[in-house]
Length: 500
Image 1 (spheres, rainbow, N blue to C red):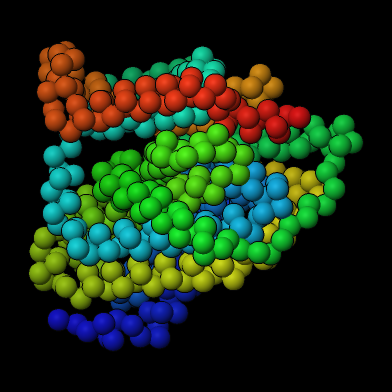
Image 2: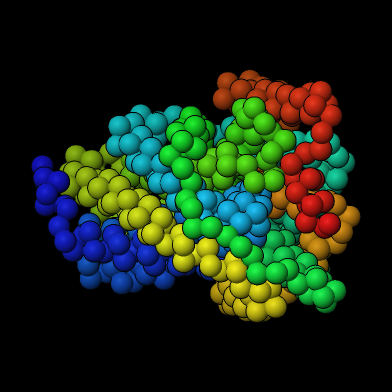
Protein backbone atom coordinates (compact mmCIF):
# COMPACT_ATOMS: atom_id res chain seq x y z
CA UNK A 1 0.00 0.00 0.00
CA UNK A 2 1.47 3.31 -1.08
CA UNK A 3 1.49 6.18 1.42
CA UNK A 4 -0.12 9.55 0.82
CA UNK A 5 3.26 11.26 1.25
CA UNK A 6 4.58 9.38 -1.78
CA UNK A 7 1.69 10.71 -3.88
CA UNK A 8 1.92 14.25 -2.53
CA UNK A 9 5.27 15.08 -4.08
CA UNK A 10 6.22 18.40 -5.65
CA UNK A 11 5.91 17.10 -9.20
CA UNK A 12 2.33 15.87 -8.74
CA UNK A 13 1.24 19.06 -6.98
CA UNK A 14 2.79 21.25 -9.69
CA UNK A 15 1.15 19.24 -12.46
CA UNK A 16 -2.21 19.50 -10.66
CA UNK A 17 -1.80 23.28 -10.58
CA UNK A 18 -0.81 23.52 -14.25
CA UNK A 19 -3.65 21.24 -15.33
CA UNK A 20 -6.23 23.17 -13.33
CA UNK A 21 -5.00 26.52 -14.64
CA UNK A 22 -5.03 25.28 -18.24
CA UNK A 23 -8.51 23.85 -17.71
CA UNK A 24 -9.88 27.14 -16.37
CA UNK A 25 -8.52 29.01 -19.40
CA UNK A 26 -9.97 26.44 -21.81
CA UNK A 27 -13.34 26.37 -20.04
CA UNK A 28 -13.63 30.16 -20.03
CA UNK A 29 -13.19 30.38 -23.82
CA UNK A 30 -16.51 29.72 -25.63
CA UNK A 31 -16.35 26.55 -27.69
CA UNK A 32 -13.18 25.13 -26.11
CA UNK A 33 -14.72 22.49 -23.87
CA UNK A 34 -12.98 20.41 -21.18
CA UNK A 35 -13.42 17.38 -23.44
CA UNK A 36 -11.38 19.10 -26.13
CA UNK A 37 -8.77 20.16 -23.57
CA UNK A 38 -8.33 16.66 -22.14
CA UNK A 39 -8.15 15.18 -25.65
CA UNK A 40 -5.55 17.74 -26.77
CA UNK A 41 -3.27 17.11 -23.80
CA UNK A 42 -3.70 13.32 -23.77
CA UNK A 43 -0.65 12.75 -26.07
CA UNK A 44 1.54 14.65 -23.57
CA UNK A 45 0.85 11.92 -20.98
CA UNK A 46 2.12 9.01 -23.08
CA UNK A 47 5.63 9.25 -21.63
CA UNK A 48 4.56 10.26 -18.12
CA UNK A 49 4.03 8.04 -15.10
CA UNK A 50 0.45 7.09 -14.29
CA UNK A 51 -0.31 9.40 -11.35
CA UNK A 52 1.26 12.58 -12.84
CA UNK A 53 -0.49 11.82 -16.13
CA UNK A 54 -3.87 11.66 -14.44
CA UNK A 55 -3.06 14.71 -12.32
CA UNK A 56 -2.71 16.73 -15.53
CA UNK A 57 -5.86 15.38 -17.19
CA UNK A 58 -8.00 15.59 -14.04
CA UNK A 59 -6.82 19.17 -13.49
CA UNK A 60 -8.01 20.12 -16.98
CA UNK A 61 -11.30 18.29 -16.32
CA UNK A 62 -11.97 20.03 -13.01
CA UNK A 63 -10.68 23.47 -14.06
CA UNK A 64 -12.50 23.37 -17.40
CA UNK A 65 -15.83 22.52 -15.78
CA UNK A 66 -15.50 25.53 -13.45
CA UNK A 67 -14.00 27.84 -16.09
CA UNK A 68 -17.20 27.88 -18.13
CA UNK A 69 -18.88 29.90 -15.38
CA UNK A 70 -16.50 32.86 -15.85
CA UNK A 71 -17.71 33.77 -19.34
CA UNK A 72 -21.28 32.79 -18.43
CA UNK A 73 -21.33 35.28 -15.57
CA UNK A 74 -19.39 38.13 -17.18
CA UNK A 75 -20.50 38.15 -20.82
CA UNK A 76 -23.59 35.90 -20.77
CA UNK A 77 -21.75 33.38 -22.91
CA UNK A 78 -21.42 29.91 -21.34
CA UNK A 79 -17.95 28.54 -21.83
CA UNK A 80 -19.28 24.97 -21.53
CA UNK A 81 -22.73 23.34 -21.88
CA UNK A 82 -22.78 22.62 -18.13
CA UNK A 83 -22.45 26.34 -17.29
CA UNK A 84 -25.54 27.41 -19.26
CA UNK A 85 -27.72 27.37 -16.12
CA UNK A 86 -25.17 29.53 -14.29
CA UNK A 87 -25.79 32.56 -16.50
CA UNK A 88 -29.47 32.76 -15.50
CA UNK A 89 -28.54 34.34 -12.15
CA UNK A 90 -24.79 34.86 -12.51
CA UNK A 91 -25.05 37.38 -15.33
CA UNK A 92 -27.80 39.47 -13.65
CA UNK A 93 -25.56 39.67 -10.57
CA UNK A 94 -22.73 40.94 -12.76
CA UNK A 95 -25.03 43.51 -14.39
CA UNK A 96 -25.88 44.77 -10.90
CA UNK A 97 -22.18 45.43 -10.22
CA UNK A 98 -21.73 42.27 -8.16
CA UNK A 99 -19.56 40.31 -10.58
CA UNK A 100 -16.98 39.53 -7.90
CA UNK A 101 -19.65 38.04 -5.67
CA UNK A 102 -21.01 35.89 -8.50
CA UNK A 103 -17.53 34.68 -9.47
CA UNK A 104 -16.59 33.86 -5.88
CA UNK A 105 -19.87 31.97 -5.45
CA UNK A 106 -19.06 29.94 -8.56
CA UNK A 107 -15.60 29.09 -7.23
CA UNK A 108 -16.82 28.12 -3.75
CA UNK A 109 -19.79 26.11 -5.03
CA UNK A 110 -17.63 24.35 -7.61
CA UNK A 111 -15.14 23.44 -4.90
CA UNK A 112 -17.91 22.14 -2.62
CA UNK A 113 -19.43 20.05 -5.42
CA UNK A 114 -16.06 18.65 -6.42
CA UNK A 115 -15.02 17.73 -2.87
CA UNK A 116 -18.36 16.16 -1.97
CA UNK A 117 -18.29 14.04 -5.14
CA UNK A 118 -14.69 13.01 -4.33
CA UNK A 119 -15.72 11.86 -0.86
CA UNK A 120 -18.62 9.86 -2.28
CA UNK A 121 -16.28 8.41 -4.90
CA UNK A 122 -13.85 7.23 -2.21
CA UNK A 123 -16.49 5.82 0.13
CA UNK A 124 -19.16 4.39 -2.11
CA UNK A 125 -17.69 3.90 -5.59
CA UNK A 126 -18.21 0.16 -5.98
CA UNK A 127 -21.63 0.09 -4.31
CA UNK A 128 -22.99 3.02 -6.29
CA UNK A 129 -21.69 1.57 -9.55
CA UNK A 130 -23.85 -1.53 -9.05
CA UNK A 131 -26.94 0.70 -8.82
CA UNK A 132 -25.97 2.45 -12.04
CA UNK A 133 -25.73 -0.95 -13.76
CA UNK A 134 -29.45 -1.50 -13.15
CA UNK A 135 -30.27 1.37 -15.50
CA UNK A 136 -31.77 0.26 -18.80
CA UNK A 137 -33.54 2.10 -21.65
CA UNK A 138 -36.68 2.74 -19.58
CA UNK A 139 -34.67 4.26 -16.72
CA UNK A 140 -32.59 6.48 -19.03
CA UNK A 141 -35.75 7.70 -20.76
CA UNK A 142 -37.40 8.48 -17.41
CA UNK A 143 -34.33 10.45 -16.22
CA UNK A 144 -34.45 12.44 -19.47
CA UNK A 145 -38.14 13.18 -18.99
CA UNK A 146 -37.43 14.33 -15.46
CA UNK A 147 -34.82 16.69 -16.87
CA UNK A 148 -37.30 18.07 -19.41
CA UNK A 149 -39.77 18.74 -16.59
CA UNK A 150 -37.42 21.57 -15.58
CA UNK A 151 -39.08 23.58 -18.38
CA UNK A 152 -41.99 24.23 -16.04
CA UNK A 153 -39.63 26.13 -13.72
CA UNK A 154 -38.70 28.59 -16.45
CA UNK A 155 -42.02 29.21 -18.14
CA UNK A 156 -44.95 28.15 -15.99
CA UNK A 157 -46.56 31.57 -16.48
CA UNK A 158 -46.38 31.23 -20.26
CA UNK A 159 -46.16 27.50 -20.74
CA UNK A 160 -47.07 27.70 -24.44
CA UNK A 161 -43.90 29.64 -25.30
CA UNK A 162 -41.81 27.35 -23.14
CA UNK A 163 -43.23 24.25 -24.81
CA UNK A 164 -42.61 25.80 -28.23
CA UNK A 165 -39.00 26.43 -27.28
CA UNK A 166 -38.38 22.93 -25.91
CA UNK A 167 -40.07 21.38 -28.95
CA UNK A 168 -37.71 23.37 -31.17
CA UNK A 169 -34.79 21.91 -29.18
CA UNK A 170 -36.24 18.41 -29.51
CA UNK A 171 -36.50 18.94 -33.27
CA UNK A 172 -32.83 19.94 -33.39
CA UNK A 173 -31.93 16.73 -31.55
CA UNK A 174 -33.64 14.71 -34.32
CA UNK A 175 -31.46 16.13 -37.10
CA UNK A 176 -28.85 13.72 -38.42
CA UNK A 177 -28.43 9.97 -38.63
CA UNK A 178 -30.84 7.90 -36.56
CA UNK A 179 -28.90 6.04 -33.85
CA UNK A 180 -31.06 2.92 -34.15
CA UNK A 181 -31.83 2.57 -37.85
CA UNK A 182 -29.04 4.53 -39.51
CA UNK A 183 -31.49 6.55 -41.64
CA UNK A 184 -30.79 10.24 -42.06
CA UNK A 185 -33.39 12.70 -40.83
CA UNK A 186 -33.84 16.32 -41.85
CA UNK A 187 -30.36 16.46 -43.37
CA UNK A 188 -31.74 17.46 -46.82
CA UNK A 189 -28.82 15.90 -48.64
CA UNK A 190 -26.10 17.60 -46.60
CA UNK A 191 -23.42 15.11 -45.50
CA UNK A 192 -22.34 17.52 -42.74
CA UNK A 193 -25.81 17.38 -41.20
CA UNK A 194 -25.61 13.60 -40.74
CA UNK A 195 -23.64 14.14 -37.52
CA UNK A 196 -26.49 16.25 -36.14
CA UNK A 197 -26.42 19.61 -34.40
CA UNK A 198 -23.42 19.81 -32.08
CA UNK A 199 -24.33 20.88 -28.55
CA UNK A 200 -21.43 23.35 -28.34
CA UNK A 201 -22.42 24.97 -31.66
CA UNK A 202 -26.00 25.33 -30.42
CA UNK A 203 -24.77 26.71 -27.09
CA UNK A 204 -22.67 29.37 -28.81
CA UNK A 205 -25.44 30.20 -31.25
CA UNK A 206 -28.34 30.42 -28.80
CA UNK A 207 -26.44 32.35 -26.14
CA UNK A 208 -23.19 33.88 -27.38
CA UNK A 209 -24.33 35.07 -30.81
CA UNK A 210 -27.67 36.20 -29.40
CA UNK A 211 -25.82 38.30 -26.83
CA UNK A 212 -23.60 39.79 -29.55
CA UNK A 213 -26.63 40.62 -31.72
CA UNK A 214 -28.46 42.18 -28.76
CA UNK A 215 -25.48 44.33 -27.80
CA UNK A 216 -24.97 45.34 -31.45
CA UNK A 217 -28.57 46.50 -31.54
CA UNK A 218 -27.94 48.61 -28.43
CA UNK A 219 -24.78 50.13 -29.91
CA UNK A 220 -26.51 50.96 -33.20
CA UNK A 221 -29.18 52.81 -31.27
CA UNK A 222 -26.38 54.72 -29.54
CA UNK A 223 -27.47 53.35 -26.18
CA UNK A 224 -24.03 52.08 -25.20
CA UNK A 225 -24.01 51.60 -21.46
CA UNK A 226 -21.68 53.58 -19.27
CA UNK A 227 -18.66 51.80 -17.83
CA UNK A 228 -20.03 49.24 -15.41
CA UNK A 229 -19.18 49.92 -11.79
CA UNK A 230 -18.33 46.79 -9.85
CA UNK A 231 -16.90 46.06 -6.43
CA UNK A 232 -14.16 43.58 -5.58
CA UNK A 233 -16.11 42.26 -2.61
CA UNK A 234 -16.47 38.48 -2.64
CA UNK A 235 -19.44 36.63 -1.17
CA UNK A 236 -19.68 36.63 2.63
CA UNK A 237 -19.27 33.55 4.79
CA UNK A 238 -22.81 34.09 6.06
CA UNK A 239 -24.24 33.68 2.54
CA UNK A 240 -22.09 30.59 1.94
CA UNK A 241 -23.27 29.01 5.20
CA UNK A 242 -26.87 29.87 4.37
CA UNK A 243 -26.51 27.94 1.11
CA UNK A 244 -24.74 24.93 2.65
CA UNK A 245 -27.82 22.71 2.31
CA UNK A 246 -28.37 23.96 -1.24
CA UNK A 247 -24.80 23.03 -2.19
CA UNK A 248 -25.09 19.61 -0.52
CA UNK A 249 -28.35 18.83 -2.34
CA UNK A 250 -26.98 20.07 -5.67
CA UNK A 251 -23.74 18.13 -5.19
CA UNK A 252 -25.67 14.92 -4.55
CA UNK A 253 -27.73 15.55 -7.70
CA UNK A 254 -24.59 16.19 -9.72
CA UNK A 255 -22.83 13.12 -8.37
CA UNK A 256 -25.80 10.89 -9.14
CA UNK A 257 -26.20 12.29 -12.67
CA UNK A 258 -22.45 11.87 -13.21
CA UNK A 259 -22.65 8.21 -12.21
CA UNK A 260 -25.39 7.50 -14.75
CA UNK A 261 -23.57 7.12 -18.10
CA UNK A 262 -24.39 9.41 -21.04
CA UNK A 263 -25.99 12.21 -18.99
CA UNK A 264 -23.43 14.87 -18.04
CA UNK A 265 -23.08 18.25 -16.35
CA UNK A 266 -25.68 20.00 -18.50
CA UNK A 267 -28.47 17.77 -17.20
CA UNK A 268 -27.17 18.01 -13.63
CA UNK A 269 -27.02 21.81 -13.56
CA UNK A 270 -30.55 22.27 -14.89
CA UNK A 271 -31.99 19.73 -12.45
CA UNK A 272 -30.16 21.24 -9.48
CA UNK A 273 -31.20 24.76 -10.50
CA UNK A 274 -34.83 23.68 -10.70
CA UNK A 275 -34.69 21.96 -7.32
CA UNK A 276 -33.04 25.02 -5.75
CA UNK A 277 -35.82 27.23 -7.06
CA UNK A 278 -38.44 24.80 -5.83
CA UNK A 279 -36.90 24.71 -2.35
CA UNK A 280 -36.34 28.47 -2.14
CA UNK A 281 -38.49 30.73 0.01
CA UNK A 282 -38.17 33.42 -2.68
CA UNK A 283 -38.42 31.62 -6.04
CA UNK A 284 -39.44 34.87 -7.71
CA UNK A 285 -35.86 36.11 -7.31
CA UNK A 286 -34.47 33.40 -9.57
CA UNK A 287 -33.40 34.79 -12.94
CA UNK A 288 -32.81 38.22 -11.42
CA UNK A 289 -29.60 37.52 -9.51
CA UNK A 290 -30.43 34.89 -6.88
CA UNK A 291 -27.40 33.56 -5.06
CA UNK A 292 -29.08 30.17 -4.72
CA UNK A 293 -29.22 29.72 -8.49
CA UNK A 294 -25.46 30.16 -8.94
CA UNK A 295 -24.67 27.96 -5.94
CA UNK A 296 -26.91 25.17 -7.26
CA UNK A 297 -25.74 25.23 -10.88
CA UNK A 298 -22.02 25.31 -10.08
CA UNK A 299 -22.07 22.78 -7.23
CA UNK A 300 -23.94 20.27 -9.38
CA UNK A 301 -21.92 20.51 -12.59
CA UNK A 302 -18.61 20.17 -10.73
CA UNK A 303 -19.95 17.26 -8.69
CA UNK A 304 -20.32 15.42 -11.99
CA UNK A 305 -16.49 15.22 -12.18
CA UNK A 306 -16.30 12.84 -9.24
CA UNK A 307 -19.51 11.03 -10.09
CA UNK A 308 -18.44 10.26 -13.66
CA UNK A 309 -15.28 8.60 -12.32
CA UNK A 310 -17.34 5.97 -10.44
CA UNK A 311 -18.46 3.85 -13.42
CA UNK A 312 -15.13 4.48 -15.16
CA UNK A 313 -12.97 3.09 -12.36
CA UNK A 314 -15.28 0.35 -11.11
CA UNK A 315 -16.84 -0.91 -14.34
CA UNK A 316 -14.80 0.53 -17.17
CA UNK A 317 -17.85 2.45 -18.41
CA UNK A 318 -17.29 6.19 -19.12
CA UNK A 319 -19.77 8.43 -17.33
CA UNK A 320 -19.43 11.18 -19.96
CA UNK A 321 -17.33 12.17 -22.98
CA UNK A 322 -14.41 13.35 -20.84
CA UNK A 323 -14.14 10.11 -18.91
CA UNK A 324 -14.25 8.32 -22.27
CA UNK A 325 -10.95 10.07 -23.03
CA UNK A 326 -9.69 9.18 -19.54
CA UNK A 327 -10.56 5.55 -20.28
CA UNK A 328 -8.14 5.76 -23.19
CA UNK A 329 -5.53 7.27 -20.88
CA UNK A 330 -5.87 4.30 -18.52
CA UNK A 331 -5.38 1.87 -21.38
CA UNK A 332 -2.32 3.78 -22.62
CA UNK A 333 -0.85 3.28 -19.15
CA UNK A 334 -1.51 -0.45 -19.47
CA UNK A 335 -4.32 -0.49 -16.90
CA UNK A 336 -7.73 -2.12 -17.24
CA UNK A 337 -10.50 -0.38 -15.25
CA UNK A 338 -12.73 -2.57 -13.14
CA UNK A 339 -12.77 -4.35 -9.76
CA UNK A 340 -9.27 -5.77 -10.32
CA UNK A 341 -7.86 -2.25 -10.61
CA UNK A 342 -8.72 -1.65 -6.95
CA UNK A 343 -6.96 -4.79 -5.75
CA UNK A 344 -4.00 -4.94 -8.14
CA UNK A 345 -3.19 -1.23 -8.43
CA UNK A 346 -4.45 0.50 -5.25
CA UNK A 347 -1.74 3.16 -5.61
CA UNK A 348 -3.35 4.34 -8.89
CA UNK A 349 -6.79 4.58 -7.26
CA UNK A 350 -5.37 6.49 -4.29
CA UNK A 351 -3.41 8.74 -6.63
CA UNK A 352 -6.58 9.60 -8.62
CA UNK A 353 -8.47 10.36 -5.39
CA UNK A 354 -5.70 12.63 -4.09
CA UNK A 355 -5.22 14.34 -7.47
CA UNK A 356 -8.94 15.13 -7.69
CA UNK A 357 -8.89 16.72 -4.23
CA UNK A 358 -5.74 18.74 -4.96
CA UNK A 359 -7.15 19.95 -8.29
CA UNK A 360 -10.33 21.13 -6.58
CA UNK A 361 -8.27 22.99 -3.97
CA UNK A 362 -6.25 24.73 -6.69
CA UNK A 363 -9.47 25.53 -8.53
CA UNK A 364 -10.78 27.31 -5.43
CA UNK A 365 -7.51 29.21 -4.91
CA UNK A 366 -7.18 30.31 -8.54
CA UNK A 367 -10.88 31.16 -8.69
CA UNK A 368 -10.87 33.36 -5.59
CA UNK A 369 -7.51 35.03 -6.27
CA UNK A 370 -8.45 35.66 -9.89
CA UNK A 371 -11.90 37.06 -9.10
CA UNK A 372 -10.82 40.76 -9.00
CA UNK A 373 -9.02 40.33 -12.33
CA UNK A 374 -11.85 38.42 -14.00
CA UNK A 375 -14.38 41.02 -12.86
CA UNK A 376 -12.58 43.77 -14.79
CA UNK A 377 -13.80 42.25 -18.06
CA UNK A 378 -17.26 43.60 -17.39
CA UNK A 379 -15.90 47.15 -17.46
CA UNK A 380 -14.84 46.86 -21.11
CA UNK A 381 -17.24 48.79 -23.39
CA UNK A 382 -19.50 46.64 -25.54
CA UNK A 383 -18.13 48.20 -28.72
CA UNK A 384 -14.74 46.64 -27.87
CA UNK A 385 -15.79 43.53 -25.96
CA UNK A 386 -18.39 42.16 -28.38
CA UNK A 387 -16.07 41.95 -31.45
CA UNK A 388 -13.63 39.99 -29.27
CA UNK A 389 -16.42 37.68 -28.14
CA UNK A 390 -17.55 37.27 -31.75
CA UNK A 391 -14.05 36.25 -32.81
CA UNK A 392 -13.83 33.71 -29.98
CA UNK A 393 -17.23 32.33 -30.97
CA UNK A 394 -16.11 31.78 -34.57
CA UNK A 395 -12.85 30.15 -33.49
CA UNK A 396 -14.50 28.00 -30.81
CA UNK A 397 -17.29 26.81 -33.09
CA UNK A 398 -14.90 25.94 -35.89
CA UNK A 399 -12.65 24.07 -33.45
CA UNK A 400 -15.46 21.60 -32.61
CA UNK A 401 -14.95 19.59 -35.78
CA UNK A 402 -12.88 21.86 -38.04
CA UNK A 403 -15.98 22.47 -40.17
CA UNK A 404 -17.44 25.73 -41.48
CA UNK A 405 -20.80 23.95 -41.29
CA UNK A 406 -20.80 24.19 -37.49
CA UNK A 407 -20.16 27.93 -37.72
CA UNK A 408 -23.12 28.31 -40.07
CA UNK A 409 -25.32 26.31 -37.70
CA UNK A 410 -24.28 28.52 -34.77
CA UNK A 411 -24.99 31.69 -36.77
CA UNK A 412 -28.40 30.38 -37.87
CA UNK A 413 -29.32 29.46 -34.30
CA UNK A 414 -28.07 32.86 -33.17
CA UNK A 415 -30.54 34.55 -35.51
CA UNK A 416 -33.32 32.24 -34.34
CA UNK A 417 -32.42 32.87 -30.70
CA UNK A 418 -32.47 36.63 -31.31
CA UNK A 419 -35.96 36.33 -32.84
CA UNK A 420 -37.01 34.25 -29.82
CA UNK A 421 -35.90 37.11 -27.60
CA UNK A 422 -37.93 39.63 -29.61
CA UNK A 423 -41.06 37.54 -29.05
CA UNK A 424 -40.18 36.81 -25.40
CA UNK A 425 -39.73 33.08 -26.05
CA UNK A 426 -37.27 31.62 -23.51
CA UNK A 427 -34.09 30.15 -25.01
CA UNK A 428 -32.93 27.78 -22.20
CA UNK A 429 -35.69 25.21 -22.87
CA UNK A 430 -34.46 24.90 -26.47
CA UNK A 431 -30.97 24.00 -25.31
CA UNK A 432 -32.41 21.61 -22.74
CA UNK A 433 -34.47 19.93 -25.46
CA UNK A 434 -31.38 19.49 -27.63
CA UNK A 435 -29.31 18.04 -24.77
CA UNK A 436 -31.94 15.57 -23.58
CA UNK A 437 -33.88 14.93 -26.79
CA UNK A 438 -31.69 12.18 -28.15
CA UNK A 439 -31.47 10.48 -24.75
CA UNK A 440 -35.25 10.42 -24.35
CA UNK A 441 -36.06 9.40 -27.93
CA UNK A 442 -33.50 6.65 -28.44
CA UNK A 443 -34.08 5.05 -25.04
CA UNK A 444 -37.86 5.30 -25.34
CA UNK A 445 -37.70 3.43 -28.65
CA UNK A 446 -35.33 0.80 -27.22
CA UNK A 447 -37.65 0.28 -24.25
CA UNK A 448 -40.69 -0.12 -26.52
CA UNK A 449 -38.79 -2.62 -28.67
CA UNK A 450 -37.97 -4.68 -25.56
CA UNK A 451 -41.60 -4.57 -24.37
CA UNK A 452 -43.17 -5.16 -27.81
CA UNK A 453 -44.77 -1.74 -27.75
CA UNK A 454 -46.17 -1.92 -24.20
CA UNK A 455 -46.12 1.59 -22.71
CA UNK A 456 -46.79 0.18 -19.24
CA UNK A 457 -43.24 -1.15 -19.36
CA UNK A 458 -42.03 2.25 -18.11
CA UNK A 459 -44.23 1.97 -15.00
CA UNK A 460 -43.30 -1.63 -14.34
CA UNK A 461 -39.66 -0.69 -13.76
CA UNK A 462 -39.32 0.73 -10.19
CA UNK A 463 -36.61 3.31 -10.98
CA UNK A 464 -38.36 4.41 -14.17
CA UNK A 465 -41.72 4.70 -12.38
CA UNK A 466 -40.16 6.84 -9.63
CA UNK A 467 -38.65 9.30 -12.09
CA UNK A 468 -41.88 9.55 -14.11
CA UNK A 469 -43.78 10.25 -10.89
CA UNK A 470 -41.19 12.88 -9.92
CA UNK A 471 -41.59 14.51 -13.35
CA UNK A 472 -45.36 14.77 -12.92
CA UNK A 473 -45.04 16.07 -9.37
CA UNK A 474 -42.34 18.55 -10.42
CA UNK A 475 -44.54 20.11 -13.11
CA UNK A 476 -47.65 20.07 -10.94
CA UNK A 477 -45.90 21.58 -7.91
CA UNK A 478 -44.36 24.39 -9.94
CA UNK A 479 -47.58 25.26 -11.75
CA UNK A 480 -49.71 25.21 -8.59
CA UNK A 481 -47.26 27.40 -6.67
CA UNK A 482 -46.89 29.92 -9.49
CA UNK A 483 -50.67 30.11 -9.95
CA UNK A 484 -51.04 30.85 -6.25
CA UNK A 485 -48.32 33.47 -6.34
CA UNK A 486 -49.68 34.98 -9.53
CA UNK A 487 -46.23 36.33 -10.50
CA UNK A 488 -44.09 36.09 -13.57
CA UNK A 489 -41.46 33.42 -13.84
CA UNK A 490 -37.87 34.41 -13.24
CA UNK A 491 -36.76 33.67 -16.78
CA UNK A 492 -39.52 35.78 -18.28
CA UNK A 493 -38.90 38.69 -15.92
CA UNK A 494 -35.16 38.57 -16.60
CA UNK A 495 -35.68 38.66 -20.36
CA UNK A 496 -38.21 41.49 -20.10
CA UNK A 497 -35.80 43.57 -18.03
CA UNK A 498 -33.06 43.05 -20.59
CA UNK A 499 -35.37 44.15 -23.43
CA UNK A 500 -36.21 47.31 -21.56
